[in-house]
Amino acid sequence: MDPIDALLLDLGNALVELFRINRGAIHGIYQGSHEAALFEAQGGMIGPGGFNHLQSVIDSAAAIQTRQDAANLALNRINGVDPVLGPRVRALCQPVLDLGQRYLDAAAQTRNAAAVLQQTNATRLQGVVVGQGGLGPEIVRSEQALVSNQLTAMAQQLEARGIEPRLIPQAQSALQSTLNAIKQLPIDGREAAHKLGVVLASIRLLVRQTAVRAAIIGRARLLAVLLGIEQALVAFGSRLTTPILIDMRVIHQTLGISGPEA
Image 1 (cartoon, rainbow, N blue to C red):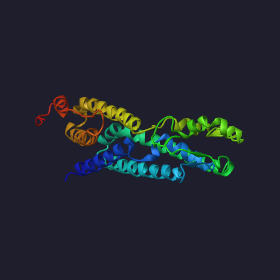
Image 2 (image 1 turned 90 degrees about the vertical axis):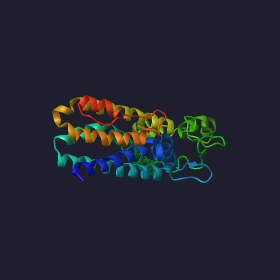
Image 3 (image 1 turned 180 degrees about the vertical axis):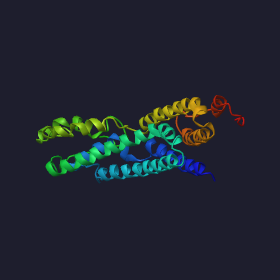
Image 4 (image 1 turned 30 degrees about the vertical axis):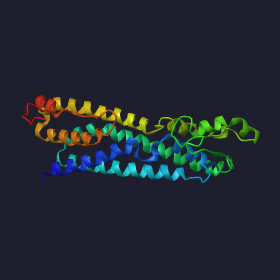
């Protein structure tokens, strides 16, 4: 097998895994999990039995990092085999790597903020219990179910107990940036899929733009790259509400290459 072919297989597999995990296959990328981690760091409890949401955030970040590392390893190896092709392949994959990095950055901020709150406010919310997925009997991921909004809804009774009804206490205003970062995360699977869909559409556009330039930079190998990325998109894109597909006949025509009819 040609070295590029083997590396493209590795890259395609890594991309599919990144697509899957960024689609919302793990709980630790959601706003609710991050807010719950900060709540629990201050002694609060989610549901009657409690849960370690910080560990969920940490485990999710580790899973994303593993897949980011696999994709980067394949990209670095492609660059080693073909230094001209390598940067162009990385540019095609960069949108999904950037999305994964945003999730990693948010997880790092949440982990650091939780550590601070455990040191300074470990018992501030002790005895406060919020619902897992809201104050009602159903467990759902929604705006209303976020811990911050549940605390707001409980403001009167919390204030009567001398508890500030905020996820981040006023005295820790420096941690507000963490809460702002958390607000950029998806609330539920639908929103996670939308964020990923935007990324996949961006990759599709980059693939077609790259195809236009392919004749200048060695089109045979680039076509192999485009096919590898396209196969990863098709393998995953069909699972989304709006499939992300690339018509390779258009790329073949652009490159002036005779290809099989789809």
